[in-house]
Image (cartoon, rainbow, N blue to C red; front, side):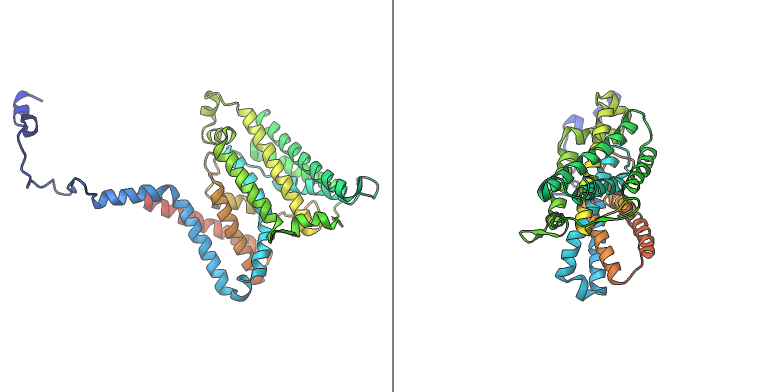
Length: 369
């Protein structure tokens, strides 16, 4: 700027400007102590933008609940139905938590249902005495404790196998867990020879069908698991490392994160969650079989995607998964009351996923405008 331009600038010469001067056309005047409409709108969007997916999911869940209530007012809104749902959805929720952790790290675990079944089969064979010549080892109480310990250890072992394949041998998570899924399912078939193992002690069945202080025991498992997974994924060093690894593996490696250790621990935890799910499954159904819960795999993937988890890794929250589980449980209960076949349910799961993704994308575009 030359000297003549400096001299002609009233602000530089200390001269007063005309207070009646209007701003250029198309601009909003600034007022001290006031907020323009554009600023107010931007402030609102800055609050809503990070929660766009959550708001859409909650709206869909409410819509599903209202729709099923209208179609089946007498049965869907009954206390018996709500109690039944509280016994059923924790199994899917725990598997979805396992899938959440795997996806946060940038992977996926297709073997969670197979692990749950294998762990449940081992626990069932201990409870019925099939592994000890026909009689439970050391009585009912001892066999129950042993069954739970063996199931959890089995889940951790299966998860560690996944972790070794993915972290040490660098096998793609989808291929590694696809292979181990077949391995674990085959092991379950070998142990049971394709039949169902049943006839558990009443005290063990209380894990899947009992209540504590009027609250279903499986729901208590769900609540505890939700809190623990939230703390792990959001408030621990391991959880932060999972997210960074899922967001940018190269940056995670150069930041000093021991990537192999993080991946290994992640899949061990998913295996333990699957094992607990297996215990709840056999306790609720009073039987164990290698092909139980086959639809849970697709549903758990659907839940985490509906819950806002990024399939590529790095982003996801427990709250979204919890809401998505409720949405699917409302749908499943309503479909059962409407006598929908399992084939129709599978078709509708896909339609529901597509509709949600489209609505979520449209919502995010509007918020970003």
